[in-house]
Length: 296
Ligand code: GUN
Image 1 (spheres, rainbow, N blue to C red):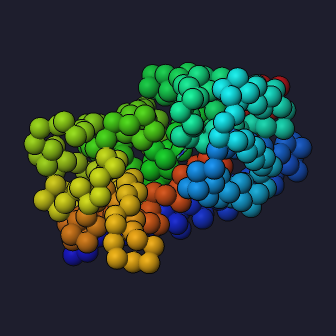
Image 2: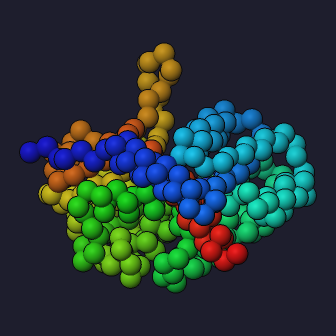
């Protein structure tokens, strides 16, 4: 039997519509308008598209948004100055510096400069540390936080389940494991983190009730690696060359056509985890605004 398809597009749409209503209430009841600043350095075409999408999504939710575009040769000091300005700006509750940054800029130095309360990416070492020590009132990275929402909203609460995360990146794998482990809604799972150096990976992944693929290799998770009935979440977005006019198509980390015959539920690529990331960026911006507002 074929798996139930989990539509990230539909879930993200529902979250964005709930946020729109929530933002309208914040404005009416507290005079609070959440604000998001997105900083782009350079002219990477993919980053330009992402940044534009983030700004548009914020506008649609009623969130004030600012885009700051700087030339690729911007000195590190100047970017630090921009971040300091945004830290001090009372209209801005969320700051996102689009990655990757040009080579002459130390990414870690920039992430450290962002006020942790405005770190809607959840990449500041303070937020990384808080999340890994189980804090529940912390801004969590958008992609894994989106995965948790997808699980909860499809009746697949991770509590008491064995979740296997394949991948150990700072953006997905590690924070994913921290969220699943937390003593909190969306957590309380038994968690295994596997990666490219894990011996006999299929034996590990076959133990998963919830299998999260974040390795960055197209079609890496095959049907023999999946327990029948498992929930399979595909975080991968890989370009695969083909003969189309565009020259490539997008493929996930999961061999969708064969795995859907074994899994109980599965996310597609595109239309799975991808749309959730922006929805959770908006959600983090609203959370940040409410916390900053409450702290006065
Ligand atoms: N580049 C690609 N994805 C992301 C993201 O989630 N946050 C930031 N800041 N940069 C990115």
